[in-house]
Length: 157
Image: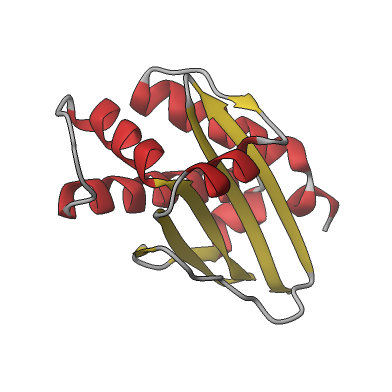
């Protein structure tokens, strides 16, 4: 359980994915999620489920402007709205984060699968997980983009 719930694995996964895919360095920022939530009326959330040795999910949540900035970095295009390309980009970032995180624990890398990303957009929603075994949630920022990544574990075999 200690290897799975080690917060450094989440930080390392965010650093790896954002440097490789977006060419940016992220800083852990405890105020980032609150700033993103209060500053923008619309947010984007991607969820990738874990199945197998670990049951749970990786959740990536950000405001609309951060989602467009992430997608712009990934594609080289500019965005003025949350369109299908932005949603796909946020889903893919979540998928890569989930894969990088589970890859840090050899047993999970070999015995835990990932679902297809689901992306939710809107103004007033909460994602609720009933009584997880453990949960890691860190907020990050790069430039003026703020986001949060959460690992939720329902059960670990």
